[in-house]
Amino acid sequence: PPDQRRTHKNDEISGMLQALSLDEKIKFNHNIEVNNNRRRRAHLAHALDPSKEDGSPTASLITIEDDEYQTIRKS
Image (cartoon, rainbow, N blue to C red):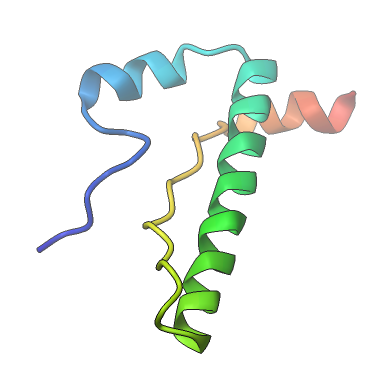
C-alpha cells in the first residue's frame, strides 16, 4: 500500500500549508526536520536492537516556491 501522507493529508490542508507566510513555512519545515531526524534515529535504534520501538514514517516538508527562495537569498 502507498505511504500514508503525514503533512499534506488532503487538498484542503495542502492549500492551508501553501497559504502560510514564508516565515511560518520555514519554522514549520524546521520542526518537521527535527521530528524526522528523531524518527530516523528511532528506526536505526530498532534496526540495531529490534526490542526497541521502531520509528514512524517521516513527514514531507512544505514546498517553498522559487520566488520565496529568492526572497530568502536576498535577505
